[in-house]
Length: 256
Image 1 (cartoon, rainbow, N blue to C red):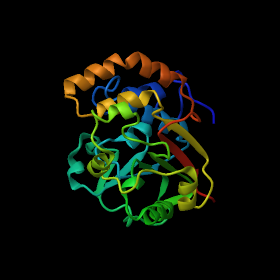
Image 2: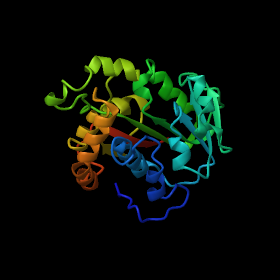
Image 3: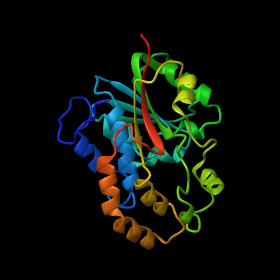
Image 4: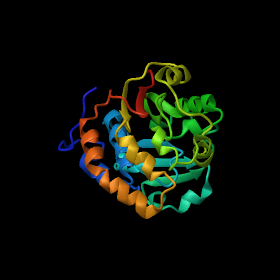
């Protein structure tokens, strides 16, 4: 896979530098840096192709797909009706629908791209959710997915356990019904080979990630993430799409 540099200007996608600068997570350069990692990985696998209609499954209040494809009409479908009032869903180019990923209220082959960012690990019937996403995707359209992979652990290091809630508690709070997926498991779900992938949150940047979700006070979390910034940034810049990471972004192109 070819990495895309921040200085590049692209066509249908947003410029990478501007995209990353709009990280919706608070303290995006310190405590929310892990979300920047996710955004860069998604950007690396997202195709720069004409896409008039894009479906965001489970987009909630993040607005990530609208940031990625600012020239497209975005439909964000989510189970939680409260997200209808989120600022990202009040944009003219965004239509919010309260609905179920396993029963999408759209015609066959309606969308050029379907995104499922941090979604399928939350859906009990993930096979049905994937089938629905592929049903509404046009031939040669792209399915973009991000999810924890087989390396995901929380907390990652043993010494973080006194500061972090138990994994079962985190899984319940985040609404996970499974830990994550290997590439082989996702490929079996989707039914055809993955076109590209990019990992994120590596063995060094994950320290700040775990601190950000620890039991420390908000001020202490921000302090430690700021103190860890030099390590986090260096590891971030050295990270390659194929390097070890705890989560992965993937792209599949639906056969013609």
